[in-house]
Image: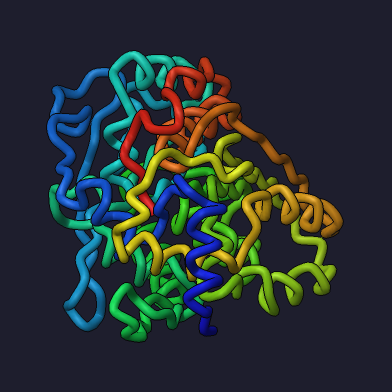
Length: 335
């Protein structure tokens, strides 16, 4: 899709301050080299102990690091499990107080943090490939067409065939109480997994999903096929969005930066309230229980910790800490 210079200029004015939310454009605006630093993964085991394993892709080009949080005093009964994408970033959200509260539950969850085998908070190129079911072809700031993404099917296989069995070897998992959480492109992966593998998890938590990806392809045939297929597979679905995201007020951005202008050409594939509209459509699907939650004042970046905190509260009854995660510019975004 091509846009005239006049259209781009007008769009830039209308969307002044739009949050960049693409891994290979936005991440360059918000330190793509941010490291995890010290997290609960490095602390002595207390309420939870963490075990680590690494999974290699069949071609040897990718390595996923999985940290499994197991309650230190796990009951003998099977436990629920939360599979969290961007596992390195998710680990940074956890603290000992929250882990202690989770461990005190009657059925404390096993926490499966799926990240990449490096110390980056967010590995943008890797997640762009793994979290997207659609190949995105778009012009960059130099007018050069890029083709990226499309690895979600293979990554879903890795989760089902390699990560889940290894987790089950380390902890006793209740197969009827499994949840998948993801933010941004991760939220998009949650949705494509729901559409193609609705029985893989019982809870799908999609935060700030990048529905604009590939000129809005996530709102196209795959969604319609899922909605039209009245299979009746039961699942609970949460769609979460920051209030600032929904109205397009996402902080100051340098409109003289060509990466920003290039990004503006791409985000027109979805309206800012696309997640809200999607929740209405999914609510009509037999077997689904759908909830939409908006977080007042939050932009894209702070929605990562806020939605992860909210997921833990909704699923396991711990105190909801999402209101403590700051305003629209309080944290680096992670598309």
